[in-house]
Amino acid sequence: MDAPIPVEPAALDLVFRRAQADTRLVRRRVAYPYAIQAPLRPARAAAGCHVIVQSASGGLFSGEQLRQCLAVESGADARLELPAATTVHAMRDGGQAEVEVEVEIAPGGCLAYLARPLILFPQSQVTQRFRFRLAAGATLIFRDGFMTHDPWAAGEHFRLLANEIDLCSAAGRRILLDRQSVTGLALAAGGPGIIGPYRAFGTLLLASLRPAPWTELAQSLQAVEMPGLHVAATPLRREAGLLVRLAALDGGGLDDGMLRFTERLEAIQAELPGP
Image (cartoon, rainbow, N blue to C red):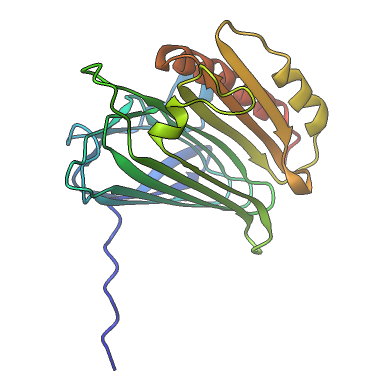
């Protein structure tokens, strides 16, 4: 019988726990390329734990397989922020980079996972998989996006971006399975619908297994106007939250839009009824 294939430990493995009136980072495993600072406690979220994640590698490179595991225990309030955009470097050897993020949020727990956009260089290829498991009363705010970049104006394109978001309840009932697959060549050629001139795209989620006027909230988000930004918003199935899509003319416009809509989702989250 063949030996089982060993599973590489997560390069970022964090556990947040509620302790009295506070949230603490009670377990951390941080390996290259990640680095984290000591948790911050902003005044606006006195009971929360704010962790900033940095990369020592300068981006994603061919052959990298990075894994993150995050757990938010009952009642804990955590904010994980990747404050810098991630460069996905050229992979002229035909390889790719892979990033896998696994998140478990226990009853009453809250996590904001806030990434800045990927910068896709020519000949880059990256696969990202996000797996979220939410218990009753748990809340997730998620932000991710990408932009194209041709630094030498040589008419080159990224090779492939493949994204998957798998969001389920703790009981295994699927709320959202979202898959994206796009090549730089297809994006540059434009296409049907609104894609046309847009070269930067973002996804935001507010997921919470509790009742709220999600349809009306989605309509209010979609009504927001910003120059050079197209917005689409929809309630999630099972009355579980909101999905927001952004399309921008360039990376700067996308970044501004993602920051603004993060603030709006956080304001909505603050008004949700208790678990």
